[in-house]
Image (tube, rainbow, N blue to C red; front, side, top):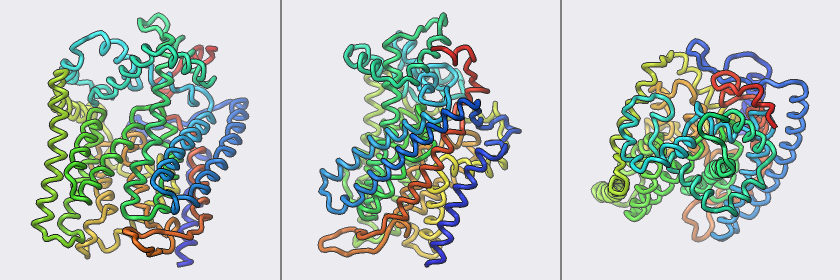
Length: 540
């Protein structure tokens, strides 16, 4: 056991060192140059490096505060009632979002928080905001014609997504426009870097038909805040998922890693950051529906899935995971009920979920003539068309994608998940009961995505929705868990009296990797694919 722990920590230290060397000490391309897809490294002048060093000091202080908060709450979670536990999770959302913002201020502009306005406004990134401001706001039958728009064959971001994010941006614009007090508050309390970034956007967009107004400045900042909040809120359903098989202490320690995931800061404020919340929420609600054989929870799961599917087809792998895991648990899991009874219960839960999902589709068509099935089908065709227009070398991306995932989620968490997979799924093919393991089906789903080659390029961003899974499978890792205490009346094993130094050290390593990655990786190709004019960068 001692040798195993030593190897674990040596691997962790090696992973951190390898990450820093790869990003900062080498010129190895972060991608596949032959396919014209490489993540850029952020470059900086001597003056910018000094400023960034100061940012690292501030981020270090924020990390200490974050670790103190996590450690203090860790001492309370076992004794906390439901309301106090809810309060700690809400506090983690806020503290995590603050840490998230502090770390993003480390790199120089336009990769600091100043990127918020650029990414949300400028065409070439996602186009949701301007689409909502122009066509979606001006055309009463916009949603009715959305399927026809998809048939135009755009293979980039717009053509491969349902209209959910456009509707979200339109709603935010409307709220800000109708609430002068909210607008004033958002304008007054913008960080200087965000305000400078919006000045840059105003200069770039001048004379191009869609001038940047005060409403836009406030709405763009609000969208950035909501995106960060949605990403951090993932800790709540993730806690519920881990809590299904672990004690509170373990579940708390697991979710404390989520705000430290590098991809959440590197790619803020892209729409992908909303997906982990809805994907994890669906798994949590569906898991509750199946474990309790509750068709009302099945109805709720269908509603959550329909909302997620309005945003992105990335919810499909989530549904695949839920289907495989549930079916395996029904067939091979431990249960006093006979197989026929379990199958009937499964059919009832699935029927409830599919029923509420179908109702949501019908309501969308009835209220706005939005044909969601037609939109989804065309999104899939457009996605396939991308690889016809932009060929990818399958074998190269087969090697690169796991490395990219490790860098995006952080090598400490990645190695943590891998070691847990290796131990928890051991003997799965020999034991029928092990086939019901959610760790196994998380791995299977990830392998299917990896081997399909459908994320050849940008896996660091495209796979954000599945990153909670790598924390989910870590619930019983010995470095987090400890002695099982079988207290009176407990329905799940609780972990008490666990030394926290190993957990805190792992959190610290993850924070170091996150800061190093955010300070070095340009997630938006500001200086190559979507260059910001030099004159605009100097706008005051």
